[in-house]
Image 1 (cartoon, rainbow, N blue to C red):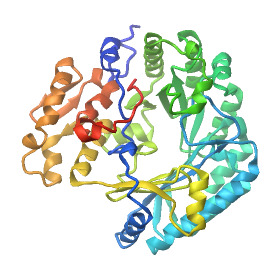
Image 2 (image 1 turned 45 degrees about the vertical axis):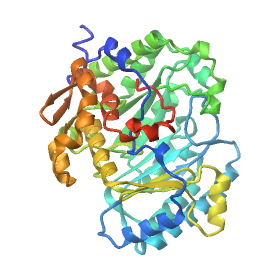
Image 3 (image 1 turned 180 degrees about the vertical axis):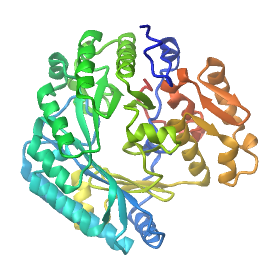
Image 4 (image 1 turned 135 degrees about the horizontal axis):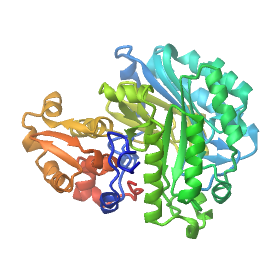
Length: 470
């Protein structure tokens, strides 16, 4: 069987094309991206947005709770985390999260419905069973978790057994993300994450036994000491576990931004060509096992709700990745959490000290944020549709946003897209764009052409450093 026939029907892996366009760029979990948030957006602005939302229709919310603690430090990690073995640190942190929820709920003025909840980290399972129960009780006190909602949690299998999984199910969780990254012992040693296949399987089996609707496994390619042989073995073990979804992330080595990565021996990292081989290998193996490519690192079984939503044109994207939920307002709690409320983005303080100090003063712990312009809202939708549908009707988009002449409005964007069209990344029919199978791995490149902040001369003066797209 050739590599081409083993590819998903909606994806064509073209190494030369990827090498040509493998530049740095945003991941677009939001637009504008978080690096564009401003410090002059403060707690009073968030409070006003919450009051306005409380007076609006009772449409459901999405909630995110950030638990920053983890017992061991994974060297590759770029998340906001606090490595500690002192479990006494979580109780006072939950006091603060409870206080923040109370402040937010008070400004909303009513107990609003919730159809999506996610606990991330760090490691949410750093919490004891009793602490997890407490946090869920507090959440239910201030919000109404609807029946049939998506309630997910990130799991570290090294610290979770069957009883813990059963307890999480009893609390209402019905979706799970399981961190793996790689099963090879040499790779695990290089990144300080020792985790067996057996303990991972125990957690996934327990999730299924306790009625979890979806289990996702996280993998990373490009880690130190990875090669085609040992990564193929990891892929086979993951396929044997048969998760509903697989998230296949590219390792971004940015030690100047993420201090733990300085512990990684750069000489152990695969060369760009070898890393590309790992990506192609993963795509072929997952496709051969029946997984379909959703987009932006994500694969799912055809019956999974993400795959079904994409087929129906109802796939969405938020700070947690792809979602079947519509464009919900998101309220984030805990250190560094990012909320999306109407045309506002709001980020909490990034350190425990600043987060706690604001709450001690009775204030919302806001560090920065942004109020989106009409152009931001239009471009946010354009980028989301590209990332979810691999297609975009500019005429329809412009009409829905009150723009009378789409061709003129997007003239500069279309000009930037022309070289990508010539290279085969997309096809254009008038003002309708469609990303080709060979362009789908590079959809971030297509989306970047609509990012005004990447092409605005003044904004480029503060241009951040992004990871590479592959």
